[in-house]
Amino acid sequence: MGEYPKVEVREGRALVLIPDLSRYMVSGRPEPAHAPVFYNPRMEVNRSVSVAILNAYMDYVGGGNAVVCEPLSGTGVRSIRYALEVRGISRVVANDISSEAVNLMRTNVELNGLNNVVSVNHDDANHLLLELARSGGCDVIDIDPFGSPQPFIENSLRAIKNNGLLCVTATDVGVLSGKYPLKCVRRYGALPRKFPFRFEVGIRILIGSLVRYALSMDYGVKPLVSYMDGHYYRVCALIVKDRSAALESLGNMGFAYYSPSTLDRGFIQGFPMPGSTKRQLAGPLWIGPLWDYEFLIKHLGNYVMDYFSDRARELITALINESSAPNVPYALTTELTRELGRELPINDLLGMIRGLGYHAVRTHFHVKGFRTDMNLERLRDLLVGK
Ligand SMILES: C[S@@+](CC[C@H](N)C(=O)[O-])C[C@H]1O[C@@H](n2cnc3c(N)ncnc32)[C@H](O)[C@@H]1O
Image (cartoon, rainbow, N blue to C red; front, side, top):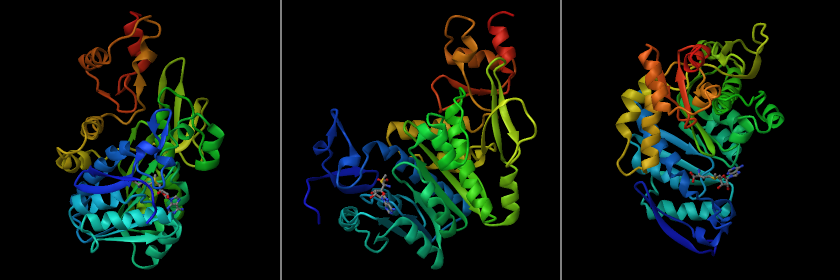
């Protein structure tokens, strides 16, 4: 086993050894990417929310005896947490290309008494996924890479079973949300725009790209949970392996538009081309729901554990709340108050919109963001007394 200093940490129900991050500091902060094996303490939120999502998924599909695969496992903490905290799992395949990671993972699996449940594998993720596809496939696949999940999507779709749950993390939020548009076109085949709701455009491009891979195999995609948390996007979606599901997903592909002068925004259905339009477009991207309301309300809410971090619990609550919002792009309070010359507290604005008989729900994508079915130009005019 690699000789580098390690420390024990408790996360969820797991106890794991990780590299001593105090040895890998950059500008006074630990830099997990510099350690011999990757462990990011901030991603506890991602892992705890995922534990809840996997439990909810087991309920949702009435699953048991499930096989879970994590092709990019690092220390193995996520796989170990799934084995310890999610009901109905019979086997977890934890894999990494790095031998340091695999050695540490073996120690951690042993430390948690999981030798019979978690098998540790040392391979390239794509190679492993193809092998799993040949040997019966997995119920859940969790892709948690550095940067973009793109290189692993196609083989994940091959390895996942019908009605399986595919979860992906993407840490290239800047690329997807419009900072590097041409990189996004190259990597995801879609044009982002710096619309006020650009973070939503980004996650919809990510889902849209997943859908396009799935469509090429005649599979459909149904997002169960999608969110952004700081530096990453996360999407967990049901993969339905039949043609009618693929056609349904195709109907949820299109473009987002935004007009700065009228604040008008929305989606235009149509893939690969929209109907004729003079509006600025972003896409192609997913225009269907980002959440399954029933999944969040009936299932996910039951699995918020008191030992999750405050942030993980807050995030799930925010997502449950937001899942009831109309499927329109979010708006920022600042877009509406620019002409007013002063800011308006978001809760006052939401109260006012609701008082007028419309829906108004905060979005987790932005502290000043909300979704409403009220016409935004009309709302802006009302605020400035027109
Ligand atoms: C972000 S870390 C994984 C973190 C882990 N999922 C967690 O929750 O703590 C990404 C991992 O992918 C591994 N990796 C990179 N390229 C790979 C490949 N082609 N196949 C398998 N593993 C790979 C790296 O060694 C690294 O441990």
